[in-house]
Structure formats: C-alpha cells, structure tokens
Image 1 (cartoon, rainbow, N blue to C red):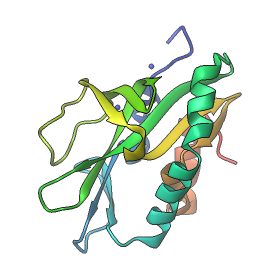
Image 2 (image 1 turned 60 degrees about the vertical axis):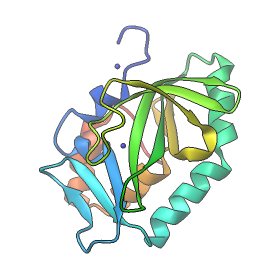
Image 3 (image 1 turned 45 degrees about the horizontal axis):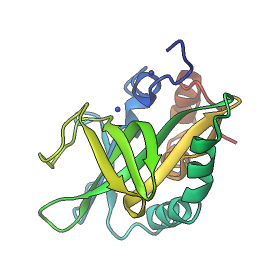
Image 4 (image 1 turned 60 degrees about the horizontal axis):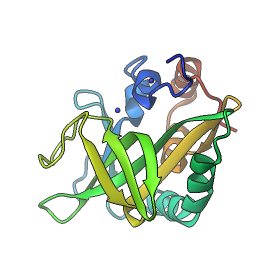
Length: 177
C-alpha cells in the first residue's frame, strides 16, 4: 500500500511511525520466490497465487459497500479512511498501493497515492488519482480506536512473529480485534 487536528490523520503518519509500521505501506504480487517484508523497499511482497491474500482481497471486495456507507455517513467516530488499489505492472501482475484522503463519486473513488510506488511510474506519491471501486483490493478506517476492514493488514500482522506483532501493536493508533 501513504494525517491532524480534524481526526482525519493520514494513514501515512500512523504507518510510518517505525520501520515495522512501514510494513503496511505497499505490497506487490509477483511470481518470484521472495515473499514477505522487504525492509529496504519498505514493502510486503506476496506471491500471485497466495490463497490467503486472495481471500483477503475477496473479503475486501465483498464488503466494499460497508466502507462506502461509512465514508458517506459523516460519523465523526470513523476516520482515517483508506483504500488499497491494484495497479497493473508490465509483468502482468499488480502493484497494490494505498490511497488516502478518500472521497467517492458514484463508482469512482478519488484519493491520494499514499506510498512510493515500487515498479509503476504512471503514478507518484502524493498524486491524486481516480479509480473504479472494482480495483479496490483492501479498505480500512478507524472507528472508536478499532481497525475496521484492513483485511490485508490483518493477514500481514498474523504472519508476523509474536514479538513483531507486539511492536506493531504498540505503534498503531488502532487496535485489531
């Protein structure tokens, strides 16, 4: 997958607190053998055939209307709205990039690229883009201090060691149930 007084703190602020938090900034699907966290690139790499990641994406897409309803609700206890979207790369796979400062217009989602892309050059960190809601591969927001959605975040956290999970949890402004 890039926030202060108005409670719409950007996802980037929370995710960049430590290198551990940067774990969430971006992810790529690829056919190579190297998977997991790449500290140098500050990205998580998943194989294109990762069944758990495919399930996280399926859940995100199945529940995206829950996200859109919360976004439109004006509920002040819900904040830090973000979506992760798939951007195609030349090898036929996708780079998944977080967008923040989200607003919806019909089936279009407008947001700001929230992490530095690794492969694609068509978009850059801080650029505003519009995507179709069908390209969303994850979504999340915080409500009453708890992470809502964030299916890929939950998966990546589950894959951390207990020590990494504890460090991650200390750095986040939300809890994961």
